[in-house]
Amino acid sequence: MDVSPHEARVRLEAGHKGPLSVAGRLDLTHTELTSLPPDLRCYELDARGSKLRSLPKRLEVESRLILDACAELRELPEGLTAGAMSLRECRSLHALPEGIETWFLDLTDCSRFERWPATGNIHSGRVRLRNCIELRTLPDWLGRLASLDLAGCVGLTEVPASLEITGFIDVGGTNIERLPKSLAQVPLHWRSVPIDHRIAFEPSRLTAQEVLAESNAEIRRVMIERMGYLRFVEESRAKELDADTDPGGARRLLSVALEEDEPLVGLACQCPSTGHQYFLRVPPHVTSCHQAAAWLAGFDDPSLYNPAIET
Image 1 (cartoon, rainbow, N blue to C red):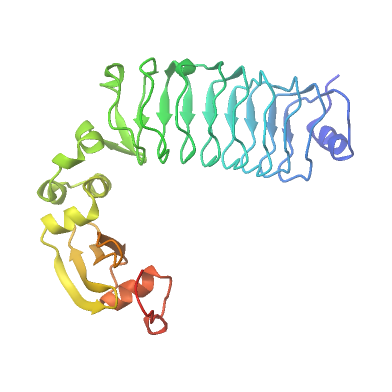
Image 2 (image 1 turned 45 degrees about the vertical axis):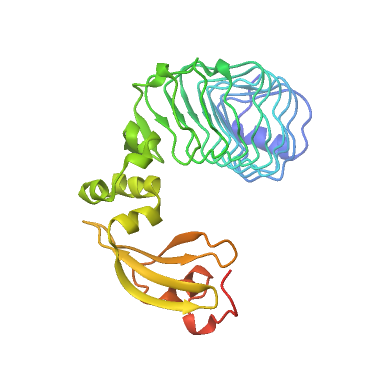
């Protein structure tokens, strides 16, 4: 017999061990529970911010399973099924279980996630893997998806040729240099900004003239990122606001005016040990090289920043 969500929570917090069938949405947000009883059934389970370390075998969730910010969650049961699974900021989760099945999967900011199961099924829904920095591969079984968000997955270099996407793919901040021919016509995003193939995969062909002519500020910012700040300011003949020499070498504070956007201001300097050139962006209100260096080092008051040498 089903119990009410309130009664179910009371039982669980009292240490209930047996099977439990809940009528409706079970709210376990921010509880101190570290585990749940076996054979738990509910329409929706929301345990975001809880102390859960694992989920029980034979857990049945008909609709949404929400486990966002469960910092101690380390594993999920084999054969886990739910209509949608949100596992955002589960920073201790390394892998998904065998036989996982869902329509929508969100692993945003799961910084330790790295291992897919050999088998699984995502029924033509959305998959979000933003900032899964340990992820190196995508499984062939992903198949057909509505959209795939890979922004910030710095370890990814390719996507499987078997993948089909009916909506868009976001490749912002990844190391993916090309897509399979099967995805050649799929719309591209760069951290949620719609872009074209050349911006995504041929940044060496971009020019400062093109960037400055771009009317859309969001696309323009992506183009500058893809070009690289240093090349952009060099090609755009940036205005020099200040120049000096510190113990690490010569440096310049440069500015480029951007239409309908704040100016791009940054400190051009070189690493004293490697000689590598850098352009480090700073807020537009900065007016001197020393103030820029102080801001980059975390000092609001430039007078307090007096290093013997810049590193």
